[in-house]
Length: 377
Image (cartoon, rainbow, N blue to C red):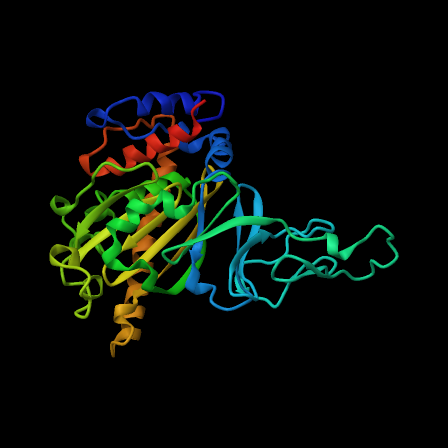
């Protein structure tokens, strides 16, 4: 089994990305199985980049919140009393317990250990039985803030005070999919999962549609043709590829009232991989996404959500469309889980060797280049 002593994963990755795409190989097994390499990713990537916690429309009302862990820092993202999105440390300033969990609605942030309670702006509202401590001053306590930005309906957080704004990093994405109007897609489901695979295996699985005819033979494999897939070179902050869908899946097509998209764009699906770990399937009719966080080399935390374009919301069969979409995506997820967990099982083998990449795996090559650029000495 691969281990952290031999080989050095970063050195192996350096040799891997030095090859031109025309002769490129998949990343070496050590990049996926090494605990030391995962720690480098947490410190060099996740502690410095933007991480997506979901959609803004899921946090509509004051007190709506979602929690996250980012580079070992528990964070809560919430809608405050003024209607603004805020991200705060989710660690009590008393005995340092974590506080809120999951996703929900709260009038205040209350510590489950001793009942210290914080307002939605992070200021301390109350602290029981503290009057006899002469040094205690309630006004001196406020939960540390974390950078939080909204972009086209997506909510991002970062621990890096110097990170470029999301909109600046992703202006090419915004221009490319302007006709889809991503702000006006409504999330209809959200779940969190853990799978027994490396986060990069799942990210790369999303980045290439080469696997669709085989891995997804029982669901969407027959709806996409390899010869119609386009995989351009990636950009600094993201990569993407496109698929032309046929009208067998009507809700993947532009709605008849959509006058923003023309020609083949009315049936084009964008698969956007926004570094490091937001993966968006965007069709003219629906979207779904994965936001990934490494837990262990062989375990990934997944935020999984999706919904429909608001163009479809007034249709008589709108609810039927939502149900059909979720049923399809659940079936696709079962297939992806099986495939990606098998890949990780193979990566742990002493006999595992990375093979050459197909032209349909160009995004995987660009992803490797991105990782090395962030982690190199």
